[in-house]
Structure formats: C-alpha cells, structure tokens
Length: 228
Image (cartoon, rainbow, N blue to C red):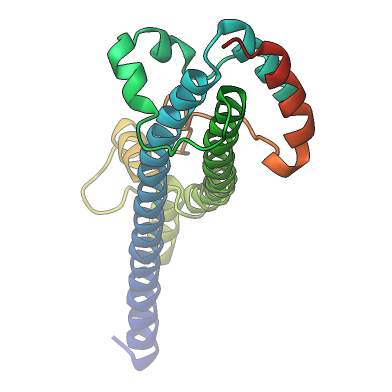
C-alpha cells in the first residue's frame, strides 16, 4: 500500500467516524430536548389540575346556575370548564372549596360579590400563567419537530449505507450483508418520531380578562343574579 493509499484509507475512516459521531451527537440532543419537553408537559398538567380546582371554587362562589351562566357569558365562555366535575362533588365537599377565602363586607350582597371577585382574580392569574406555559410548549413542539425532520433527512440509513459503500469503492451491501428489508427496518428504527400532543396531554384552558377590565360589568351581573 502506497502512502497515498494510506492517506485515502485514513480519510475514509475519519469520514465514517465523523458520520457516526454526528449521528449520535444529534440523537442525544434530540433525546435531551424531548425529555425537557416532557418535563414542561408534566409541569403544565400539574398546574392545570390546580386550575381545575379554581374553576370549581368559582362555580361554588357564584352559586346559582343562572349566575354561572350569565357570568360565563360575560367572559365569552361557551362551555363550562370542569363543570361536570363540579356537579359530581358532594354538597359537603363543595362547601369545603371556599374555606380558604376570608369573608369580607358588611352585607350579604357585598360578601357574595367580594368572594366572587377574590376567586376570579386567582383563577384569572393562574389561567394566564397556564396560557404562557401552553404557548411555550406549542412552540417547543414545533421547533422540536423541525429538528426531527432535519435529523431524519440527514441520517437516512439507506443514504448513509450508500455513502459508506461508495467510500469503499463497492457496489455491494455494507458489512453484514443487509438486505433491502433489513435496511428499511433499521432505517425506521434510526428515525425520530415527530411529537404530537393530544388535548388530553395538553388541555387548553380559556384565557380570561383581568378583573380590573370587567369589574364593573361583573358587578352588574352579580347584582342582578344575587339571591339572599
């Protein structure tokens, strides 16, 4: 073997090693990014569970079904988030929902109004933070899928095998004599799957306006629906 042959052989080995190293480096990056995404989803799900309790508190604070309907109409909500869960609660458990809230106001009507305001303010703050988390996760999924598409395009096993065979100056299969079906199976296993999130995994909660923006209108509705 001449010196030129030795150099070419070393170059082939280097190129093959670089292909393999790049593959595993990019794969580790995608695996770590996918794990980070899953952590964000888990945190969102836990926070969404807490927000669901806040909706139950809100329904209990409003009291009558007519009050719930009119206030949700004011908020622009066509559906009642977690209302089925609220209906399934025993009366005693419903009463416990509002125990953390301090009663304030000289009259029953004022106490009712302030209670609704207090619960709504917490509900709005929590759903607002959840909205930011939700949007961040949606963006993360989009960027991750873009990286997955690039990875799958860059590391198609059939193309890699062909490149390595060309480096060796051969037309036959690479070492191991993989047949077409085996190549396709290995290629499938090497690909990363795009991430898709279902509503069950990532429930989208409604965006609610801050209390200061609707306080006057909300007070009018509460004045109409209040029944001592």
